[in-house]
Length: 212
Image 1 (cartoon, helix red, strand yellow):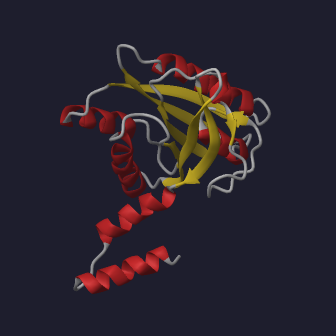
Image 2 (image 1 turned 180 degrees about the vertical axis):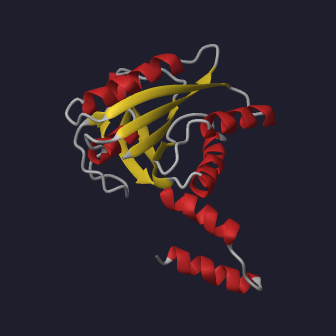
């Protein structure tokens, strides 16, 4: 099966101390007990199969003092280690963009992401890191991919941690939570496609969606 993974690469320096176990946390139903920096890798550890062809798209935001290049290498190392027990065929591609949030840069990101989409592929997304507008850009890309490439959006995930100050004065990530936020993508699609005679009917449709 063809799978495409979009992952926002952090700009801040990441290290071994950022590796945490997300098993049984949040609402994602993930039971992988390995420690990861990038939460989508905990999901992929359970979803990848030997017959899969996987394209990982590393979304790197480039800034003068950023660590996106180093962190992209950490992601690849982490997933390759997980995949060594699975044997899927994985390729890595990179999209570099400047750390500016202009209309022109948004257009550049959208076009670059869409160029990585294959027809009828399953798509996984990690929006934990990266600039705040990037998940909004990603929503647009996913909507286009599903509508015109017959793609199947399987998982959009987000990892949360608390940064706790220790006796050495440093802050360490603790209390990890892994959230499946795919429903937000489908909620956005519902609102775009919704038709109703008035606001009460529209709100009733929305209530029905939240009741699922």
